[in-house]
Length: 109
Image (cartoon, rainbow, N blue to C red):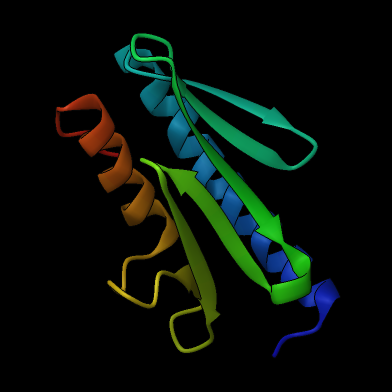
C-alpha cells in the first residue's frame, strides 16, 4: 500500500485534473462544480442531486457518492491512475459515465 504522503499527492493531482475537465464541461448547464476543503461536489440543480468526490487517506482510495451508490477507486500502479476495480474505469471515465446517467444525455469530459 502506498504511504499517505504519496497518496495525498496522487489523489490531489487526479482530482485537480478531473476538476479542470468538470469546469470545462460546466458550460453545458447540466451541473455545477464546487470545491470545498479538497472535496469536489457536482450539483445537478434541476433534480437536486449531488455527487460527492473525496479522497480517503486512511484506506488510500478516492470515494464517490453518486446515484445512491458508493464507488471506491484504488490506485493502480501499472496505469498510474485511480481505477474502479469492478469495471476498470479510471476516475475521469467513471465520473463521465455517472454524469451522463444522471443527466440522461451523453457528457464528455
